[in-house]
Image 1 (tube, rainbow, N blue to C red):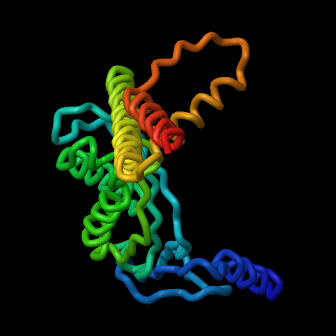
Image 2: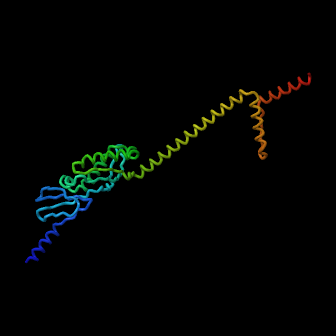
Image 3: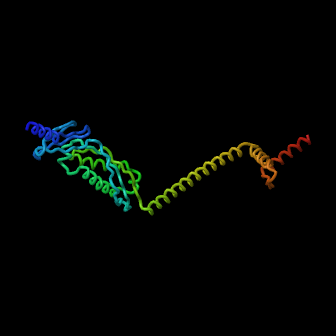
Length: 253
């Protein structure tokens, strides 16, 4: 009889002994009412009278499924995201909301669709971080009553219709061509200014234009495969006339 009693006691202890891991907290209820938080270790939970639920206190990364939405400028897009959150108050996560994982995921989905609907396509593509922070603020404020803190929200992908992707590609190509034309025009303006400045210097220096002409003739003569028709400038003819007059005066003297 004693062995039977000892066996029953051991059996009751075994079925009452519960293990709570280091990353968990146990929410204990007695006769349906919240009693206290069970810390990590082995804890005795009396069957029938007591009930407990483990709550994982680690940071969770939850994928928000693809959400179809229409931007403020009426462009249909598909967006997905990932949300990082953790439970900070175990009793609230059990008492205040049913299945907090499901609740956080669904609230994040609706919030993301609303934020996308309030933004234009350009804002969605260029300001992901700002929109993600806006989603984080809204979700964190709502889940605070559930004992949950949202650490971060990241917008992963933004999918556009194929026609819109082709249009954006054409726009980007046109923008690149525009920049190339502007750079080319700026180069031509700079070259024209340099040529104009060189012409002024040559015009102001006596004999500089003739020397430049002779240098050009010398450069052309180095290539014997071409036939060059050279038109003598009027200034050179006048210079030659001046030289002949000087020579004639020298002879008369």
